[in-house]
Image (tube, rainbow, N blue to C red):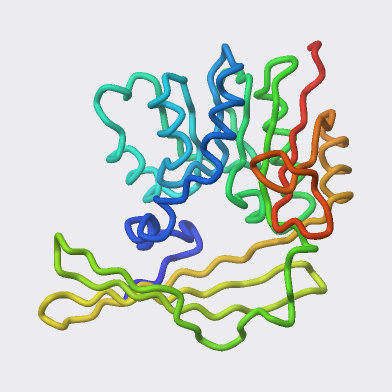
Length: 261
């Protein structure tokens, strides 16, 4: 059994992560359209295994992706084709405090990554570090599941089967089970994933990964952005830029740094 340590919450899980997430592409055209307006490189916060960063790099953009997980970044580098390696770099760094020594026209915090920041202090620190890396007029876009989208009473507090995947190349089966601890008073939910990897010989290896997510409301997020010196340009409920409303399961915020240093 692999049980990742606190230093790398996705340690031991990075090579399994893409089984579930690599095929997700609902947001890629949205980020590509924003990146198309940029002259300076693009920054991705919490780049993980490179799903967004590599897509933008393949379109011709220069991209820097940061993440705290060394194993996730190792997978991202392995997936980077030789032809684009000179346009993308992956840096192990904490998005609450980082110094990359360059400016960006666009910073992306995709796929709920901002929700890994569990305290207001952490959220503020992340936004402050990001603003320091944005060129004047540079844009930040982040996508989260807002607190209004969570049906707290429906979250499973018992072990539940999530998915199974058969790797035809190796003959292995991967099965994930998840249990969720609900904490509505702190707007957080802690998820523990158990992934069983069954080989052709019937041997089973289990990987356990746990993470906690915080759910933020619209006005809470707007206040955080304003306090960081970012001017809100739009709040959307999906990647087609539908208005954020009562039925939205996504909250996508677009904000811009002031145009002068």
